[in-house]
Image 1 (tube, rainbow, N blue to C red):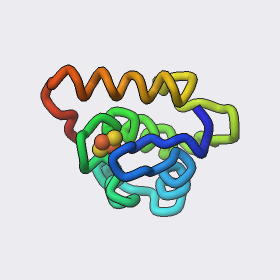
Image 2: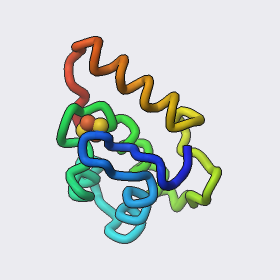
Image 3: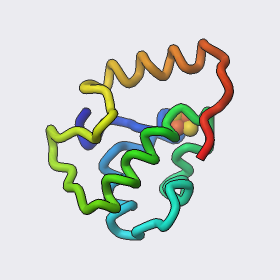
Length: 96
Ligand code: FES
């Protein structure tokens, strides 16, 4: 996925915003990632990814264009399709 691809579809938050937020504010807990434009406070789909972004930023990983966060799908289309499956499944909402 690219830095401008959306991670949180509910609040239209791209990877770039989330990584900048994590680097700038150094949140202690992953749940504080929701302070970035409300990411993760809607359907909950993106919460596991927000946790990965938080963990990698805390390890001082860089996110250059073309790099991927471990565990993220390769493309935005794959990510969007996985979210559609999540929404259709009706499974319990992801939580921080
Ligand atoms: S996609 Fe982030 S809360 Fe729904």
